[in-house]
Structures are given as C-alpha cells and as structure tokens.
Image (cartoon, rainbow, N blue to C red; front, top):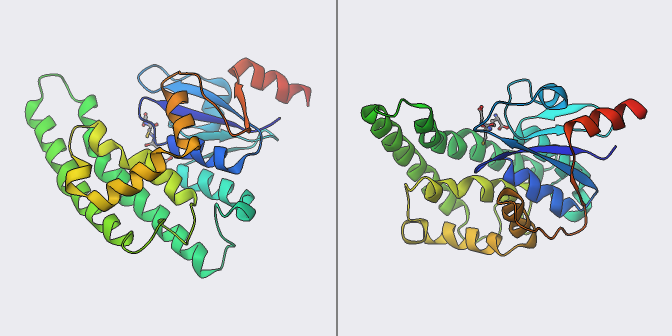
Length: 236
Ligand SMILES: N[C@@H](CCC(=O)N[C@@H](CS)C(=O)NCC(=O)O)C(=O)O
C-alpha cells in the first residue's frame, strides 16, 4: 500500500507534510481529520496514539507521528530532489537546526494562540494572557527567522527543502489568529511566504484543506477511508 498521511483541519501543521509529499512526487493518499471532532479509532489511533496530526501510515503498516520525524522521512526519500541532505553533512545539520527552531519555537509560540479555543467562553483574562504570550513570543521568532532569511532565497541551502514546507504551514498562523500584519511587521519574512504561496504544492495543500478541487503534481492518489486501509493491509 502507498503511504497515507493523516492531516488535520482547520489550520493543521500537517500542511507542511502535504507540501513535502507533493514536492516528493511519489504516490500517497490522504485522510482528513477534523480536529474539532472526536478522533476516529482504527488506523488513525494506531498511527497517532495522542490523536494529533500529522501522522503517517506507511506502506508496510508501520506508522510515524510527529512532523519532524515525518518531514525527515520524506526528505530522506527526496535527496535527489533537494528536499533534504545526507545525514552527517553540514547541510543536514542546518536543516535539522531550522526544523527544530520552527517546531520548538515558532509552533510553540503560536500554539498559545490556538490554546484560547480550549478556554471557557467567559475566560477573558485567560484569553488575553494567551494572546499576549503568543504575540510576544512569536514576534521574537518571526524577527529571528527574518534575520535567517537575510541574503538567502530559502531557509536552508540554495533551494527549497522540507523546512520551507513546514515553515509555510506554521508561519501563516500569526495572521490566521489575527495577531500580526506580517507584510507590515516582517516584510522579508512575508516576501518568503508570498513566494511559497505561489508554489503549486502550497496551492494544492490549501485546496485540500478547504475541500476545493486540487491539482496534484502527480503523487496524490486521493483520500482513503479508514476501512479501506485496514482491508488493503489485511490483503497484503
Ligand atoms: N508534536 C506534534 C504536535 C502536532 C500538533 O500540535 N498537532 C495539532 C495540529 S497543528 C493537533 O493535532 N492538535 C489537536 C490536539 O492536540 O488534540 C508534531 O509536531 O507533530
């Protein structure tokens, strides 16, 4: 069976894994998880014991959760396409460093903003505190990332990598949450986002999230139901 990526809506950080799969160009399926609803069991709970997205069900029935692990897995298959670099090389270290920063800093900072949706409706104090913490913390991260982009076309190396894929899925949150005007506050960072937004894989990932007709570069084989995954794996 070809791999299945469980992606989350709305606004999932799994967006980056969809973009990376498109750039890889190998056959894959998707399965949509509504993060506002109860999680399904079956292959999803096997792939994602914590109920989070992204999660990957691999062709042999093996599973992988965590964006960092999934993106490195995709990058390792796409070395010829420049999605990643050979482990042990300085370029790999830079990729790993950038992915780690994006995950442990930017994702975490903006995560405070998403946590407001878990509060009681009348918890205005909590909401204000979380939004201020998200803004203060993410402002530092956006500023730092902007310096990382100084004199560079891409976050790592001289071509797009899985770091750019993950970046575009998470960097958008500042505006999704209504916390930033990125074009005004971080113009160089915003220019990088604008360049990525024009990429066919990013356009595809938006269309998938929004349930609009989506044009794949070729790898996407469609959405696969949970039952079908079990049946295919059992028959193999
Ligand atoms: N450490 C995980 C975190 C993934 C994560 O935060 N996923 C969010 C969506 S962006 C999610 O599934 N949230 C729902 C939940 O935690 O129940 C990773 O990097 O893959």
